[in-house]
Image (tube, rainbow, N blue to C red; front, top):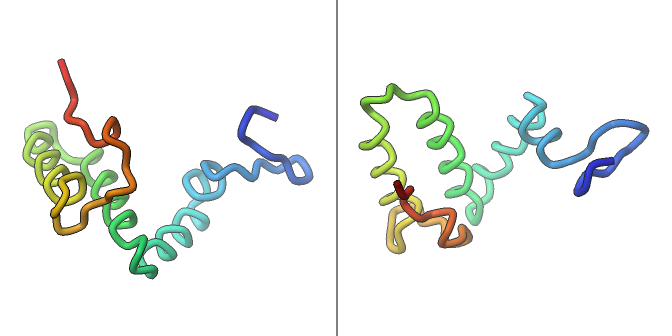
Amino acid sequence: APPGHTQDGGQDTSFRWQCLDQPIGKLLFRRFLEGAPEFAAAGALWSEIEAFEQCEEVEREATANRLRSRFFTPGGSEHCGFLSASATAPPTG
């Protein structure tokens, strides 16, 4: 098995497979995040990142700025303090 993955009867049980690749697993995991006050910001961030990935190119900069101020800035309405500084740093170049 690849590093970080476990196998159960030949079935991949990694987080990626269960909570990202499988539609029902993804739905259940997102409902779990949204239903737990301590994880609600993470669920909202996930939804907003997916919306960002679908938005038109001309909207990307404004959308990214809203994401940064809402989730990545201390004091933001849904600050995700669990994210590393490198994860929240503005892109360079």
